[in-house]
Amino acid sequence: MYLEKAKEILEREYKQRRAENKNESLIEIMDEKILHSYQVLGAGKYLLKHEPYFAKCSAEEKDFLQAVVLLHDVARFYEFLALGHGEKIDHGVYGAEMLAKIPEFNKMEALLSVRHHGHLIEMLYADKDYQNLPLKEQKKVERIAFLVRDADKLANFYLLVSKFKEMSPLFFAERVFQTPYEKTISKEAHMDFEKQYTVQMKYITNFAERALGFLSWIFDLNYKYSFVFIQKTHIVEKLEKCFSIYWLKEDGDKYIAEISQFIAQKLS
Image 1 (cartoon, rainbow, N blue to C red):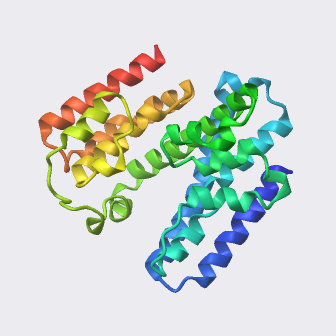
Image 2: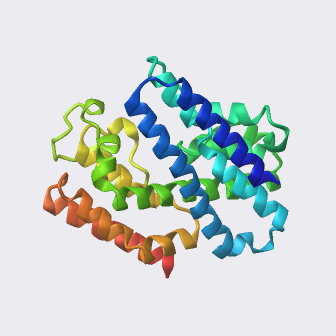
Image 3: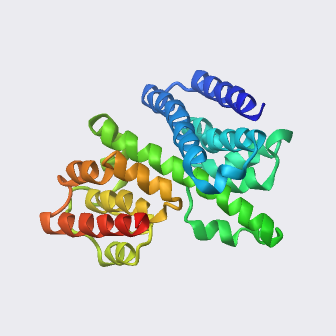
């Protein structure tokens, strides 16, 4: 029930915003994003199937969780439409506002998971709606938020390494960065990585730091089977091959070694 409803909502939003858009390059991104949503759903199903935490969930609960995963980017299409008019919105926040108007998904575990799926996890914990929940409900929200965040990252990793040439203009756009081809990693970006944090966007000024930021997403994975997926699909080795053009060799070797050790620890 929930998943079929989610598909209807997502497809309707995609088709409507695509029809309203007159920018061909943004239409292409919209087409990629609808595929991404279903790839994230696939990653979410993988985690729901294998991760022990979800073994106790009923079929209805899993249906609801799949729907939340699929709808994580429901506002992406409006975001790109707005971008074409020079406006900038937070698609997570806007997506939660959209879902709050739909009775099936007007639940804190859905709203908070969608609202903060692209933010640093600290923003979820600082959210007043989250803080006002009983502790038991906070833990439930956290687990669902982890599911959405992990599935989103796994799909993005897979997309990046499987279609790196095609996706590079989107993920590594020259206009976004101050000094795109500078290979020096700032002290601040380096320190975030060394602390096993996701590198903050404010420290990313070139392609080298952008690549490090992507690699640091692995620090934000939460479930064991997310790391199993990373290992089985050889994501790190493929990222190293893709990102080597942006890094100094000694930097790349060091960061790949650190992330590989982190993954090994999570799997041990």
